[in-house]
Image (cartoon, rainbow, N blue to C red; front, top):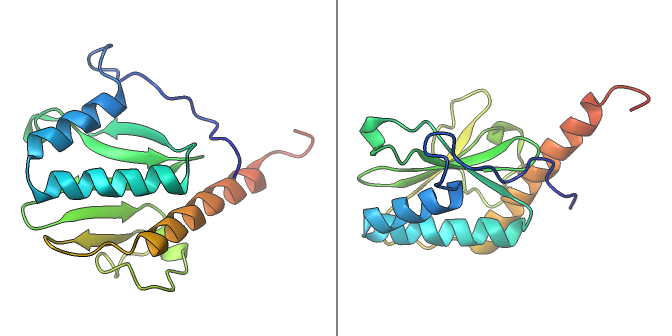
Length: 152
């Protein structure tokens, strides 16, 4: 896999909290199965693509100013939102992915996105999730290469 072109950035709001640190804080603050699940998914994503860039977007009072974890590689791959009954991984271009293991179980009617809702006690198919994530990275990289102007 090619190296991510984006650099790991410092969050704009505080100037000191890195996105990775903000995600750590979110996981700790949840303090229940959702935090454990988000931490596990994060580890799987990092194993699938060691060059993934973590970001935190959409920081607002309703999410405690911690924002939403976002994983990028030549564009957004997926977000990791937490709700009372689920941890939701939303793949930005999920409709374009094959998903032979049938991980997508939410937002299936969308034209572009697809999501995976992980409920308490669910077993995560790590192999399938890694494959899906890698496919999403490959799609982003291929799209970026196609958009590159001739002679560049």
